[in-house]
Length: 318
Ligand code: A3P
Image (cartoon, rainbow, N blue to C red; front, top):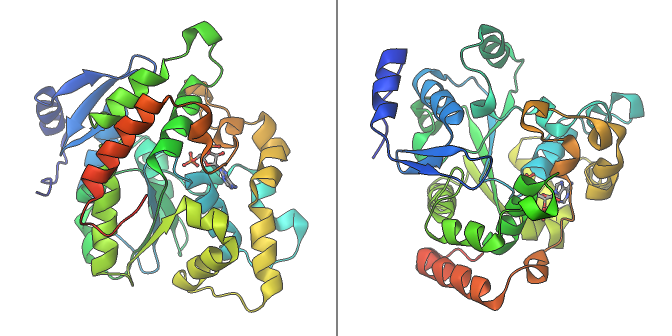
């Protein structure tokens, strides 16, 4: 089912009033369920406006992901690919600012601030932006046009969840940490920011199978196992294949977790200071299987069960 375009405030408020709501473990946020997915009020309003108004331009590239599945890494790689061949250290955008600064997550923009909306529309092509929104609520202009390519990244649900847990607990005192059991239970019930998680992944997966020229589907784990192969694939998809191995190596090194984590801008800067999220929170361990250090066997079992159920018959393994 596709959402109908909503443009005026009154109509938007009327729809929001009728939506199911639930308390989320993070910051006592209320989540609203629109078109089957959960989001905060701010995100929801931006998503509605985005869906109703966005128009693609030739060569647009939309990066898409559920939360904590490798977004920052993918953004960095795409930024570095766009700059590949430029060997000047001082021109390295990643040194100057956090990857999220250059590749905006659309629904986190203030849609009522004309400046930001204008920024998006006047950005020079090829425009590179990002969304955590599920495929079903993307603007028709993105879904139906050959102008806009999509790169989606996903990750093993258990590592994703541990990453989410750390991210939302960032800077909290030990006694204030949300118990992991609560996060796992919510996740398995489908209550997950931008979730349910599996529907999010499966929609992009199915679309990528139908139209692989338009949607490139990636897994965080594949990037870890064979970064050269995956980064070359991304560059080719973006129409910027590497001329030589050296340029590929440069991109990989520029985007390594160790390097990004230790850049001054990511050690001390903050894009979302109003939400107490510092740039350093985007770079943690980056280890496949880190969930083993935190999850009890019951939690592992709970998540494995739902993963098996949701993915069966899809051909996708996570
Ligand atoms: P961990 O919390 O498991 O360490 P997102 O960018 O979607 O928010 O995902 C965050 C996860 O990606 C974190 O995982 C983070 O450490 C990891 N990450 C961030 N930058 C990375 C990079 N350059 N290389 C590998 N992993 C990275």
